[in-house]
Amino acid sequence: MAESMRRYEVGYALAPKKQKSFIQDSLVNLARDRGIDLIRINTDKHLVDQGPFDCVLHKFCGEDWKKQLEEYSVKNPGVLIIDSPDAIERLHNRISMLQVVSELEIESKGESFGIPKQIVIYDSETLLDPNRWGEGLKFPVIAKPLVADGSAKSHKMSLVFNHDGLNKLKPPIVLQEFVNHGGVIFKVYVVGKYVKCVKRKSLPDVTEEKLGSLEGSLSFSQVSNLTTQQKNDDKYYEMMNSEDAEMPPQSFITDIARGLRQAMKLHLFNFDVIRDTRIGNRYLVIDINYFPGYAKMPSYETVLTDFFWDVLIKKETSFDSTQVVSCEKEVRKLVSNNGGGEEDEEALPVSPLSREEKENPFQV
View 1: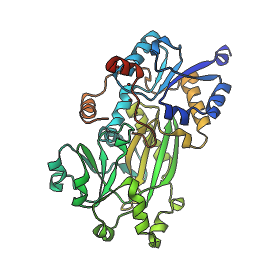
View 2 (view 1 turned 90 degrees about the vertical axis):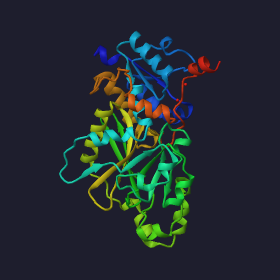
View 3 (view 1 turned 60 degrees about the horizontal axis):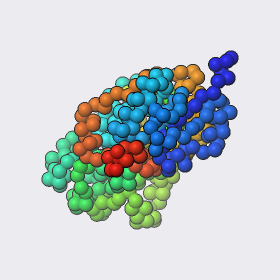
View 4 (view 1 turned 45 degrees about the horizontal axis):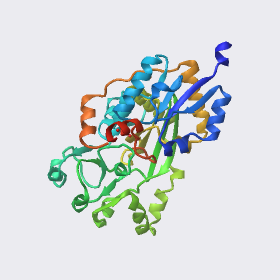
């Protein structure tokens, strides 16, 4: 009984934009009623001088921040770090983030899953010669920056219809197969063992007939132009009615989420899934984001408070969330050599202390 009466402190280190969207009064008050206090970490001070916290919740990266977490873990060996910076770092590279999907082994009665064909291109010569892409990759393709750090630059994506559209692109870049998916995307939010799947409107399908009449490329911000061009197409609007789109089987999506959580050793993330209209029971994971905009999720306050309760009181962690380890060398190389994204967040912040130390010298 005494154990249940004690209060728990969750220190959070979030960029201002993230803090504003996530740390709302409704969440703070609900958590407080459960005996959990959410306390802002002052990133202008060393972490080791603050707290002690029972859990550190963060969305930061950089060597200085990782070192601070390591020092804090040594001083407070029982603290939970949500999540390991090195585990998060894997999601900053659009190639390494999806490799884990291919490694999953999930049994399903009727559905299958995978990732779209994709290739990372480092030079213009390869970019402008589709014959060198390999793996049967062909137009249309989606062009994405290799680094996914949440910055505005990392969100500059485009739908490329033909060779002329390649001229505007600058390597390093990821070219990903565009798969017709009925104009609907499924966003799966994961909070520990909790999994919530919602559907949203997405890019419209591109038929062979339409592909021949489309020129160059369209940035994702210009996709509305495509809608305007097709405003008289009844089939288009019928396709874009996401309300009628059938949801993936919940058990199937939950199994994928569980597999990703175990493989990536992350508690807080979401992944985007599309249904391949060529094969109705095949689903493709196209993106994974760390610590997404949970406030958009129904009843997020209850979900997150239950999560805090589980990890703090019940100690329900299926992997060691206190461990801060070195990232895989290949992943680190890809990220560091090519720059460093969440759907609606600013770039991963780097510690203010690091800035003071390097400039007179911190990033998601």
